[in-house]
Structures are given as structure tokens and as C-alpha cells.
Image (cartoon, rainbow, N blue to C red):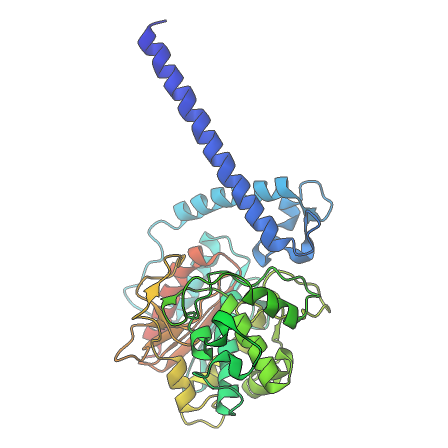
Length: 419
């Protein structure tokens, strides 16, 4: 064999070995990350109740040994199959979604069915309203408006509404330092404000505050979170995550003397008609087991009907069922972050979206958001278009990265239909 041929084979062998090592190392890191995030009782496996909702949908496929939980090797298999599914879905979705030449009411149903089929989702439902009333309702697959799901980050909008109700009552103030409510609080968090917590500009890193077992008290969880090293001084950088909002919830409990579940029920759920909604943990779920530190940024479980009722209450203008005052709505829907440094990890969300208080701010005009939304990682997409007065919510169970292009197209169709 020629020397040049041997050299070529050696280079190919080294390159393949290096590529294999890199892929194996990356996969190992991802397995460790998922195990750390979901194995809340630290027993070395992820039990069914600890799985994310998307993994729970595939438990029969993923549980290779049939023992009802997932070990590291099964998580590794899940990662490999997920990558394959993403590639397959991208191929199936090439050129989609398409915006029809003539928008009719049937266009929304066609577009929803297309999304469910192409992305192989279990189902989806979309409700659209205007002037305080439902205008459109479409569903596809195994979903209807009463199906309760984990709405992930769509929780933030609802949580912020609870906190703004407390501001209206004088229990909290947007710009007072946090040690106003907890005098013994010192260090970085003493001078942070509720406004900074709700706009993700408090200096906290991008963590999600979800590594707490169900039995951990809110006090213990709060103490754990404030010990996490901060990244910046308050008011300097926008860094999307869950730590700030979880701290805000504990402040609310201390200032009001009531548990978060009671605050949610009294201030938002009952007046807005969210009859089947409750807070828990975005991953850990076991019927009848209460989470002692409910996750404000991603732990809401709600139906499409409940979330639509919430949107009706917050979108109302001068109506009897209006949930928030005009000032509270204006504060929440004002651009709070465009002048700040932005953390680069935004996932599938557009770079030109800024942030208000607990919601994404689209196309701000003189500081006021013209569209607002609170997209959730599992595919829930609630929104209000202030220009047209139209609002709606898409609820499904799928990866937001895959669902987002279809969700934006569905919103565009809905707004066009209601003009």
C-alpha cells in the first residue's frame, strides 16, 4: 500500500475517532443535564412522575426494560431518537406553513390539522376572541378546550397578573427594594425590585428553579435560590429564566401572609373563571400530591378554555370582568428590556422580541407593546393583538421550536379573520 494511501486512511480513522468521542461526550453531558434536572429525589433514575410532559407521552417507547422509570441509558436513547425526530419533522415541514391566498374560517382548521399531522402531535386546540367573546374554536386530534396540560412558560403571564393584583392592593410595590418585605434579606437581592424580577433583569442567571423536590418548603427553596451566584447587578441585563419569578412568589407570600395557591385562586383564578387550573411543577406530576414550592415561571396546569377565560379578563377594556386596572395592564405591556444587554440564549424566539412584566413584548410603539404573548416550551401560545383587539390561545403538547412557526401562522390567520 502506498504511503499516501496509508496516511489518508490514518487521517480518516483519527477523524472518525475524534467525531465519535465528541458526539459521545456531548450525549453524556446532555444525559447528565437531564438526570440532574428531572431526578428530583436523586435516586439515579427518572420515575414516571418526574418526567417532562413530552417524555411522558413516549414512556412506553422509552422504557426499554419495562420497569416504569428511565435510567441513563434510556435517557441517552431518548436523546438520539429526539434528534432523529427533529430531522424527520423538519423534512416533513419543509415549505410549511403556507399562508393561503384567500383567508376563510376553514383556513384555521386546515392549518391546525396540518400542524398536528406534520409534527405528529397528539392534538391541539385554538380559541380566538374579540370584544370579550369567543369568535372561533378549532381542535384537532386528541385535544379539546377542556384538556388540562402543563403550559410551561405561559405560566409567567398568569403569575404576573397575580403579583400585579397585589400591587393594586398596596401589598407590593414594583420599585421598592425586596428587603422592604424581608428586612433580614441582604446582599444582591436586598436591593432588587419586583419590576426587575418580573422583567428578568434582576441579575439572576438563566436557570429555571425546577430542581426542588415536591416536599421542599417554599422557604427552603427561596434560601437555595438566593445562594446561586448572580451574573449581573440588577437592571443591567435581560436573562430569561425562572429564578427571579420564583423569588417574587416567595416575596408575595411573605408580604400577604397567604400561600401562592390561595393568592392565585382569590386574585385571578376565581374572578377570571379558571376553574380547572392549578400550580405545581412543570415536570413532576402526581395526582393529589401538592408541590410545596409551586413553580411560578412554568408550573401552571390549565386547559385551553381556562387560559382563554384569563385572556378575556386581561384583554377587556372597560368591561365588568376586567381583571387588571389600566395602569397595571400598561405596566405589564410596556417594553422593559430593549435598552438592556440581552442574554444570547433565546431558543426559537425572535431576536426582536423584548420583554414586559411576565410577557413577551412584540413590535413596541413608543414603549407600548402592540402584540404580547407568553410562549411555553411545550407548545402553548397565548397572545393578544392590541391593534385589532383580537386575542387567542393555542394549546398543544410538542416542542416549541417546532410548533412556533405554525403558531405564528395560526395567529396571523386568526387576526386576519377577525378584521
